[in-house]
Image (cartoon, rainbow, N blue to C red):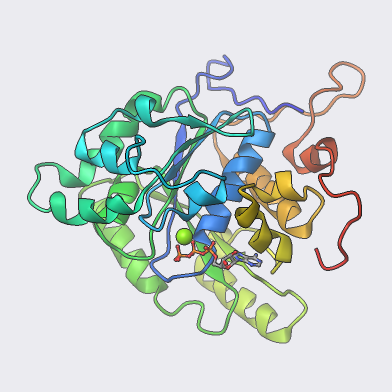
Length: 305
Ligand SMILES: Nc1ncnc2c1ncn2[C@@H]1O[C@H](COP(=O)(O)OP(=O)(O)OP(=O)(O)O)[C@@H](O)[C@H]1O
Ligand SMILES: [Mg+2]
Protein backbone atom coordinates (compact mmCIF):
# COMPACT_ATOMS: atom_id res chain seq x y z
CA UNK A 1 0.00 0.00 0.00
CA UNK A 2 1.30 3.44 -0.79
CA UNK A 3 -0.06 6.93 -0.71
CA UNK A 4 1.94 9.44 -2.70
CA UNK A 5 1.75 13.01 -1.57
CA UNK A 6 2.80 15.24 -4.43
CA UNK A 7 3.45 18.94 -4.36
CA UNK A 8 2.45 21.22 -7.17
CA UNK A 9 5.66 20.53 -9.05
CA UNK A 10 4.82 16.86 -8.91
CA UNK A 11 7.82 15.60 -7.03
CA UNK A 12 6.91 13.15 -4.30
CA UNK A 13 7.75 13.43 -0.63
CA UNK A 14 8.97 17.02 -0.57
CA UNK A 15 5.63 18.44 0.46
CA UNK A 16 5.91 20.67 3.53
CA UNK A 17 4.51 18.73 6.44
CA UNK A 18 1.01 19.50 7.62
CA UNK A 19 0.91 20.15 11.35
CA UNK A 20 -2.38 19.17 12.97
CA UNK A 21 -3.10 19.98 16.63
CA UNK A 22 -5.67 17.69 18.22
CA UNK A 23 -7.26 20.01 20.73
CA UNK A 24 -10.29 20.45 22.95
CA UNK A 25 -9.98 21.88 26.43
CA UNK A 26 -12.68 19.50 27.62
CA UNK A 27 -11.14 16.44 29.27
CA UNK A 28 -11.66 12.87 28.14
CA UNK A 29 -13.22 13.57 24.75
CA UNK A 30 -10.80 11.32 22.83
CA UNK A 31 -7.94 13.68 21.94
CA UNK A 32 -5.15 11.24 22.74
CA UNK A 33 -6.98 8.27 21.23
CA UNK A 34 -7.49 10.34 18.08
CA UNK A 35 -3.90 11.63 17.99
CA UNK A 36 -2.34 8.16 18.39
CA UNK A 37 -4.64 6.36 15.99
CA UNK A 38 -4.76 9.05 13.34
CA UNK A 39 -0.96 9.30 13.36
CA UNK A 40 -0.67 5.50 13.19
CA UNK A 41 -3.15 5.41 10.30
CA UNK A 42 -1.16 8.03 8.36
CA UNK A 43 1.98 5.94 8.96
CA UNK A 44 0.23 2.74 7.86
CA UNK A 45 -0.60 4.54 4.64
CA UNK A 46 3.18 4.95 4.15
CA UNK A 47 3.15 8.63 4.93
CA UNK A 48 6.01 9.73 7.22
CA UNK A 49 4.32 10.91 10.38
CA UNK A 50 5.44 12.42 13.66
CA UNK A 51 3.32 12.36 16.80
CA UNK A 52 4.25 14.98 19.38
CA UNK A 53 2.98 14.50 22.92
CA UNK A 54 2.28 18.00 24.25
CA UNK A 55 0.46 16.88 27.38
CA UNK A 56 2.16 16.41 30.79
CA UNK A 57 -0.20 13.45 31.38
CA UNK A 58 1.96 11.78 28.67
CA UNK A 59 -0.84 9.45 27.60
CA UNK A 60 0.25 9.42 23.96
CA UNK A 61 3.75 8.44 25.09
CA UNK A 62 2.63 5.58 27.33
CA UNK A 63 -0.07 4.64 24.81
CA UNK A 64 2.69 3.83 22.32
CA UNK A 65 4.48 1.71 24.90
CA UNK A 66 7.15 4.10 26.20
CA UNK A 67 7.87 4.08 29.92
CA UNK A 68 8.35 7.29 31.88
CA UNK A 69 11.83 8.77 31.64
CA UNK A 70 12.46 12.38 32.71
CA UNK A 71 15.97 12.38 31.19
CA UNK A 72 14.93 11.39 27.68
CA UNK A 73 14.56 14.26 25.23
CA UNK A 74 10.91 15.31 25.25
CA UNK A 75 8.51 18.09 24.39
CA UNK A 76 9.61 19.74 27.65
CA UNK A 77 13.18 19.94 26.36
CA UNK A 78 11.91 21.34 23.06
CA UNK A 79 10.01 24.13 24.79
CA UNK A 80 12.93 24.94 27.08
CA UNK A 81 15.42 24.94 24.20
CA UNK A 82 17.33 22.09 25.89
CA UNK A 83 17.10 19.66 22.95
CA UNK A 84 16.34 19.84 19.26
CA UNK A 85 13.34 18.01 17.83
CA UNK A 86 15.77 15.77 15.97
CA UNK A 87 17.39 14.76 19.28
CA UNK A 88 14.04 13.97 20.88
CA UNK A 89 12.73 11.72 18.06
CA UNK A 90 11.90 8.15 18.98
CA UNK A 91 11.18 5.41 16.47
CA UNK A 92 8.09 3.28 17.09
CA UNK A 93 6.96 -0.16 16.09
CA UNK A 94 5.35 1.32 12.97
CA UNK A 95 8.03 1.97 10.39
CA UNK A 96 6.81 5.41 9.36
CA UNK A 97 5.70 6.70 12.75
CA UNK A 98 8.00 8.69 15.05
CA UNK A 99 7.23 10.09 18.47
CA UNK A 100 8.44 13.05 20.48
CA UNK A 101 7.45 11.95 23.98
CA UNK A 102 6.27 13.96 26.96
CA UNK A 103 6.96 13.67 30.64
CA UNK A 104 5.06 15.11 33.58
CA UNK A 105 7.88 17.65 34.01
CA UNK A 106 6.20 19.40 31.06
CA UNK A 107 3.71 20.90 33.50
CA UNK A 108 6.59 23.08 34.75
CA UNK A 109 7.06 24.65 31.32
CA UNK A 110 3.81 26.59 31.83
CA UNK A 111 5.45 28.38 34.75
CA UNK A 112 9.09 28.36 33.65
CA UNK A 113 8.20 30.06 30.36
CA UNK A 114 5.86 32.64 31.78
CA UNK A 115 8.29 35.54 31.31
CA UNK A 116 10.29 34.02 28.48
CA UNK A 117 10.60 35.89 25.24
CA UNK A 118 8.66 34.35 22.35
CA UNK A 119 7.18 31.79 24.71
CA UNK A 120 4.26 31.00 22.39
CA UNK A 121 6.55 30.24 19.44
CA UNK A 122 8.78 27.65 21.10
CA UNK A 123 7.09 24.56 19.66
CA UNK A 124 6.70 26.10 16.20
CA UNK A 125 10.38 27.01 16.05
CA UNK A 126 11.46 23.61 17.40
CA UNK A 127 9.41 21.70 14.80
CA UNK A 128 10.32 23.92 11.85
CA UNK A 129 13.42 21.88 10.84
CA UNK A 130 11.30 18.69 10.67
CA UNK A 131 8.49 19.98 8.49
CA UNK A 132 10.06 18.79 5.28
CA UNK A 133 10.72 15.35 6.64
CA UNK A 134 7.21 14.48 7.77
CA UNK A 135 4.06 14.75 5.71
CA UNK A 136 2.02 14.93 8.89
CA UNK A 137 2.92 16.13 12.36
CA UNK A 138 0.16 15.42 14.89
CA UNK A 139 0.17 17.26 18.22
CA UNK A 140 -1.71 15.81 21.19
CA UNK A 141 -2.80 18.70 23.43
CA UNK A 142 -3.67 18.73 27.14
CA UNK A 143 -7.25 19.43 28.31
CA UNK A 144 -6.62 23.12 28.97
CA UNK A 145 -6.21 26.34 27.03
CA UNK A 146 -2.83 26.88 28.64
CA UNK A 147 0.59 27.83 27.29
CA UNK A 148 1.16 24.23 26.15
CA UNK A 149 -1.98 24.19 24.00
CA UNK A 150 -1.16 27.71 22.84
CA UNK A 151 2.28 26.54 21.68
CA UNK A 152 0.63 23.68 19.79
CA UNK A 153 -1.92 26.00 18.14
CA UNK A 154 0.79 28.45 17.11
CA UNK A 155 2.85 25.58 15.66
CA UNK A 156 -0.14 24.10 13.81
CA UNK A 157 -1.54 24.62 10.35
CA UNK A 158 -4.91 23.40 11.53
CA UNK A 159 -6.84 22.12 14.55
CA UNK A 160 -8.70 18.84 14.67
CA UNK A 161 -11.37 19.00 17.36
CA UNK A 162 -12.59 15.69 18.78
CA UNK A 163 -16.04 15.99 20.34
CA UNK A 164 -18.08 13.42 22.14
CA UNK A 165 -21.45 12.92 20.49
CA UNK A 166 -23.47 13.89 23.50
CA UNK A 167 -26.22 16.34 24.27
CA UNK A 168 -24.00 19.14 25.51
CA UNK A 169 -21.37 18.57 22.85
CA UNK A 170 -21.31 22.21 21.84
CA UNK A 171 -20.96 23.46 25.38
CA UNK A 172 -17.45 24.72 25.93
CA UNK A 173 -16.41 24.52 22.30
CA UNK A 174 -17.11 28.23 21.86
CA UNK A 175 -14.20 28.94 24.22
CA UNK A 176 -11.91 26.90 21.98
CA UNK A 177 -13.25 28.63 18.85
CA UNK A 178 -12.70 32.04 20.49
CA UNK A 179 -9.12 31.03 21.30
CA UNK A 180 -8.58 29.94 17.69
CA UNK A 181 -9.93 33.31 16.52
CA UNK A 182 -7.61 35.19 18.86
CA UNK A 183 -4.61 33.17 17.67
CA UNK A 184 -5.58 33.89 14.06
CA UNK A 185 -5.74 37.59 14.85
CA UNK A 186 -2.17 37.62 16.13
CA UNK A 187 0.13 34.70 16.74
CA UNK A 188 -0.78 32.44 13.81
CA UNK A 189 -2.94 34.02 11.07
CA UNK A 190 -2.81 30.83 8.98
CA UNK A 191 -4.40 28.58 11.60
CA UNK A 192 -7.31 26.65 10.10
CA UNK A 193 -9.81 24.11 11.34
CA UNK A 194 -8.97 20.68 9.96
CA UNK A 195 -12.24 19.29 11.16
CA UNK A 196 -14.50 18.29 14.01
CA UNK A 197 -14.65 14.57 14.64
CA UNK A 198 -17.31 12.82 16.68
CA UNK A 199 -15.81 10.29 19.07
CA UNK A 200 -17.35 7.52 21.20
CA UNK A 201 -20.30 7.90 18.88
CA UNK A 202 -23.26 5.53 18.92
CA UNK A 203 -25.01 6.27 15.65
CA UNK A 204 -27.97 4.03 16.51
CA UNK A 205 -29.46 6.37 19.09
CA UNK A 206 -31.83 9.19 18.24
CA UNK A 207 -29.86 11.47 20.54
CA UNK A 208 -26.65 10.83 18.63
CA UNK A 209 -28.43 11.63 15.37
CA UNK A 210 -29.78 14.87 16.83
CA UNK A 211 -26.33 15.88 18.05
CA UNK A 212 -24.89 15.06 14.64
CA UNK A 213 -27.52 17.24 12.91
CA UNK A 214 -26.85 20.09 15.32
CA UNK A 215 -23.08 19.88 14.76
CA UNK A 216 -23.54 19.65 11.01
CA UNK A 217 -25.61 22.86 11.08
CA UNK A 218 -22.96 24.56 13.18
CA UNK A 219 -19.77 23.33 11.52
CA UNK A 220 -20.97 22.51 7.99
CA UNK A 221 -18.27 20.84 5.90
CA UNK A 222 -15.85 21.00 8.83
CA UNK A 223 -17.72 18.14 10.50
CA UNK A 224 -15.84 15.02 9.43
CA UNK A 225 -17.90 12.42 7.57
CA UNK A 226 -16.09 9.77 9.55
CA UNK A 227 -17.34 9.20 13.08
CA UNK A 228 -15.50 7.10 15.66
CA UNK A 229 -17.70 4.57 17.46
CA UNK A 230 -17.35 3.65 21.10
CA UNK A 231 -15.11 0.61 20.78
CA UNK A 232 -13.48 -1.42 23.53
CA UNK A 233 -10.39 -2.12 21.41
CA UNK A 234 -9.58 1.62 21.29
CA UNK A 235 -9.67 1.72 25.08
CA UNK A 236 -7.62 -1.48 25.48
CA UNK A 237 -4.88 -0.79 22.93
CA UNK A 238 -2.96 1.87 24.93
CA UNK A 239 -2.52 -0.46 27.91
CA UNK A 240 -0.70 -2.78 25.49
CA UNK A 241 1.37 0.16 24.25
CA UNK A 242 -0.06 -0.15 20.75
CA UNK A 243 -2.11 1.80 18.27
CA UNK A 244 -5.45 0.08 17.60
CA UNK A 245 -4.46 -0.87 14.07
CA UNK A 246 -1.56 -2.88 15.49
CA UNK A 247 -3.49 -4.26 18.45
CA UNK A 248 -6.58 -5.28 16.48
CA UNK A 249 -6.55 -4.00 12.90
CA UNK A 250 -10.00 -5.36 12.14
CA UNK A 251 -11.72 -3.66 15.04
CA UNK A 252 -14.33 -1.02 14.28
CA UNK A 253 -12.17 1.50 16.16
CA UNK A 254 -9.05 0.88 14.07
CA UNK A 255 -11.11 0.95 10.86
CA UNK A 256 -12.72 4.25 11.76
CA UNK A 257 -9.36 5.98 12.31
CA UNK A 258 -8.06 4.58 9.02
CA UNK A 259 -11.11 6.12 7.34
CA UNK A 260 -10.53 9.41 9.16
CA UNK A 261 -6.89 9.48 7.98
CA UNK A 262 -8.06 8.87 4.43
CA UNK A 263 -10.65 11.64 4.69
CA UNK A 264 -8.03 14.10 5.99
CA UNK A 265 -5.47 13.12 3.34
CA UNK A 266 -8.10 13.66 0.65
CA UNK A 267 -8.90 17.10 2.03
CA UNK A 268 -5.34 18.34 1.59
CA UNK A 269 -5.21 20.63 -1.43
CA UNK A 270 -1.77 19.48 -2.54
CA UNK A 271 -2.25 15.81 -1.81
CA UNK A 272 -2.47 13.50 -4.76
CA UNK A 273 -3.56 10.06 -3.78
CA UNK A 274 -2.28 7.32 -6.03
CA UNK A 275 -5.24 5.43 -7.38
CA UNK A 276 -5.06 1.67 -6.99
CA UNK A 277 -4.30 -0.07 -10.24
CA UNK A 278 -4.26 -3.85 -10.12
CA UNK A 279 -2.32 -4.30 -13.36
CA UNK A 280 0.43 -1.74 -12.99
CA UNK A 281 1.01 -1.29 -9.30
CA UNK A 282 -0.64 -3.83 -7.05
CA UNK A 283 1.18 -2.38 -4.06
CA UNK A 284 -0.71 0.89 -4.29
CA UNK A 285 -3.99 1.16 -2.55
CA UNK A 286 -6.04 3.73 -0.74
CA UNK A 287 -5.65 4.12 2.97
CA UNK A 288 -9.19 2.88 3.61
CA UNK A 289 -8.08 -0.51 2.38
CA UNK A 290 -4.90 -0.50 4.43
CA UNK A 291 -6.61 -2.44 7.18
CA UNK A 292 -6.91 -5.46 4.91
CA UNK A 293 -3.18 -5.46 4.31
CA UNK A 294 -2.15 -5.56 7.93
CA UNK A 295 -2.14 -9.07 9.39
CA UNK A 296 -4.71 -9.48 12.12
CA UNK A 297 -3.04 -9.55 15.53
CA UNK A 298 -6.03 -11.39 16.96
CA UNK A 299 -7.32 -14.33 14.90
CA UNK A 300 -10.93 -14.28 16.14
CA UNK A 301 -12.74 -11.02 15.75
CA UNK A 302 -14.44 -9.96 18.94
CA UNK A 303 -18.11 -9.36 18.23
CA UNK A 304 -18.05 -6.30 20.44
CA UNK A 305 -15.02 -4.88 18.66
N1 LIG B 1 -13.94 5.60 20.66
C1 LIG B 1 -13.68 5.16 21.90
N2 LIG B 1 -14.23 4.02 22.35
C2 LIG B 1 -14.00 3.60 23.63
N3 LIG B 1 -13.23 4.23 24.49
C3 LIG B 1 -12.64 5.38 24.09
C4 LIG B 1 -12.82 5.89 22.78
N4 LIG B 1 -12.12 7.05 22.67
C5 LIG B 1 -11.51 7.23 23.85
N5 LIG B 1 -11.82 6.24 24.71
C6 LIG B 1 -11.40 6.11 26.12
O1 LIG B 1 -11.90 7.25 26.81
C7 LIG B 1 -10.93 7.75 27.72
C8 LIG B 1 -10.57 9.19 27.33
O2 LIG B 1 -9.99 9.17 26.04
P1 LIG B 1 -8.68 10.01 25.69
O3 LIG B 1 -7.62 9.78 26.71
O4 LIG B 1 -8.36 9.77 24.29
O5 LIG B 1 -9.28 11.47 25.87
P2 LIG B 1 -8.49 12.84 26.00
O6 LIG B 1 -9.39 13.89 25.42
O7 LIG B 1 -7.12 12.71 25.45
O8 LIG B 1 -8.38 12.99 27.58
P3 LIG B 1 -7.56 14.14 28.34
O9 LIG B 1 -8.42 15.36 28.21
O10 LIG B 1 -7.45 13.65 29.76
O11 LIG B 1 -6.24 14.28 27.67
C9 LIG B 1 -9.73 6.80 27.62
O12 LIG B 1 -9.85 5.85 28.64
C10 LIG B 1 -9.89 6.16 26.27
O13 LIG B 1 -9.33 4.86 26.21
MG1 LIG C 1 -5.25 13.15 26.33
